Length: 144
Image 1 (cartoon, rainbow, N blue to C red):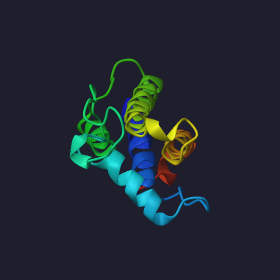
Image 2: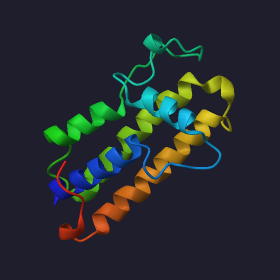
Image 3: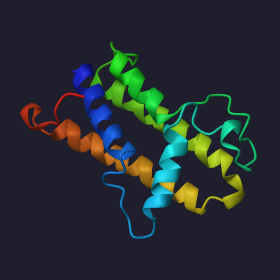
Image 4: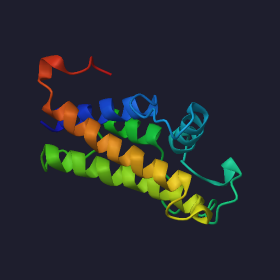
């Protein structure tokens, strides 16, 4: 059951990382691509990105979506607490990635474009994981 939950998380993550399901009128593809690059690259947001946001070089827990995907693929998630614990761990990890992104762009404020986009990404991931978990095993996406 934990493996199926991890698979659902990976499918949702891959869909969001490819910007599938994120196309929205208020964001250009360039904005989506640029923001996803920041949260998908090694370490997430850090000084190597040369952003002006306060805290850009002080991430105490750097994490990016590709690393999260690799952890899911390697089975580095809670195994003994049930599938809901896997999904909760995944959600907390995604929240950390997006929190780091928001920290870098605090100068935009809570209603800034990046913070809003991060909230949309998080909500979309939650929806996609729930959809994937509800899908019959035979109807799920092909193995990753």
